[in-house]
Image 1 (cartoon, one colour):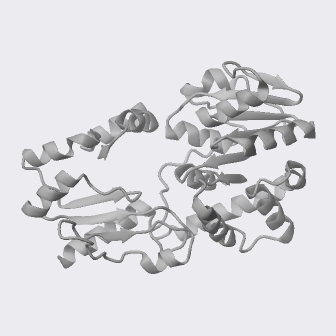
Image 2: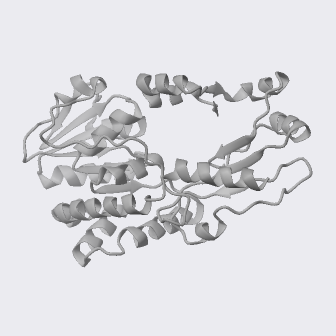
Image 3: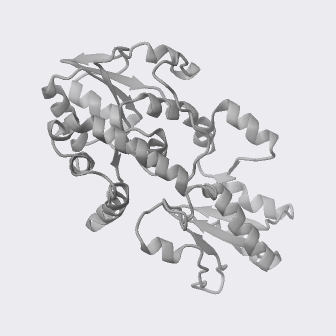
Length: 334
């Protein structure tokens, strides 16, 4: 596995997972080492590209001349209908030095590329287990039924400032578990002080969370009453948690991201009642907190049912299993 941020990958994996990967022969290598392997005569049978990242040009040139591999480009996750039509199709190289590849689209339905499922750290409120990386900070979280926990992992900015204002004005007792630099910096701006320790503001308790491995982050998602997440992987992990969530989708030019968001919401809310649908839409579009928060219980029930639907949609395997089978079939065809 080649990556331009190997240390970040290792932090996300965590020590236990890294040991498992190493035991199975998985190597995590710096992006710039790809051409070095070609000098050693190590040529792959299959190359998997992710998120539209193409392999380095030098590496591409060597393997094209020696032994062209099967190349599969795993694309971004989207619920847009056109991705089902494009899923699994080969490309025609745009120039003489490029290699043909197949495009693989993750998705939410049985006829898509599936979703990453991995391990699930489902918890119950009665469980006393706390991951070692969170033992100290989680003691700051109020463990009473009337206090709701909101995980905040966003791109920060004005939307989050408005939400914090609205939460404060609500006078509701909320513990805000604030993750990663953009959210923490925005919260510090709002507070007017550092989050190097928990801060109380009216009925809110703001707690800056440490960077933890994926499994421990999943534990936090499962323990929270509402998850506000960004990106793609945390968006999927929030759904596996079966809790209400808001997707802080990355903004694109000419609001192209809203088409992607609407496509997902059409799928997510297909079987929702009107109250739930209205509340989810208001929260996803960052409308006034007081409008949709009273429907949190209905949002929670819907999130649980959606998780069950996802499990059923993965009955023929998650993304990794489907990708493995897709590659195996192509190799058999030659």
